[in-house]
Length: 317
Image (tube, rainbow, N blue to C red; front, side, top):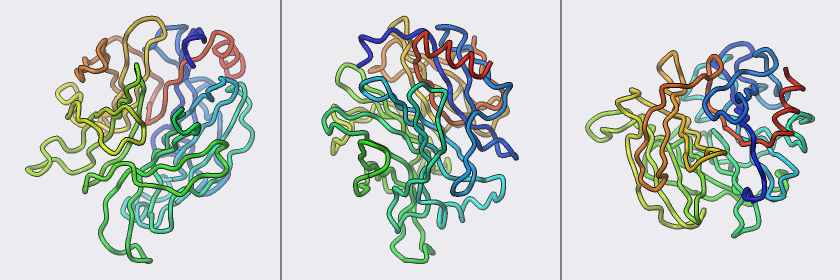
């Protein structure tokens, strides 16, 4: 799908920290084909605002269609600025995601609310979408706590669920994708040479039972819906950062290199980029020469063509 398309830059879609306008969709554009230097578009103001659900959106992710002529943006339906009751958000939060679609990355229309999680779910966090050629459909995955009691008063933990879709309107019944028996959130995946690499956050508090809690681990499989994924690395980035979440991963447009951003969510700088020339090796080196927009939170970096880069720059100069 990507071999015949020549990319000339990168779009970073993200939200910002909890504030009146923070939990909306922001775009930042790379300096040409430089994969590590970005500036906010639209003067640092949101390019998309949610008018549905909780009227706040976080953790945006964009997927390009296999034909390359359409884009789908999915995001968490959540507004923490109005309430920091994290326990309540996970017990009785939105079971829907917000979806936008576009043919040019500029005109997105109105976002729509789509319920994807089952009634026993308490939350629907950090949705991402990836095209799965095996199923001829998109796999949309997210984090949910699942409760056995209808009032969601029991104890639970976040699993990763997924559903399939071809149009982002009708979705299959959700299934559990990752269940470690403990809180796991913020999954993202990239494919290379027939192998899928999945990055996730160990959400457990760091301690004796979880010495690498609040950090990123990775695993591999040859199918998106494989029953077993092989562990690759744990505690990714620790040392360079104290803890991390919201991993995003993308490949360089110009060389055999990959970049992994990890959100050091307790620090002022937020995202910290890492790089590797061996995706299968599981070793990531911190990058020191980079420029990200102010308050860069959980999002996605999407390779774009020269025409798309110019269109984005012109629309939100």
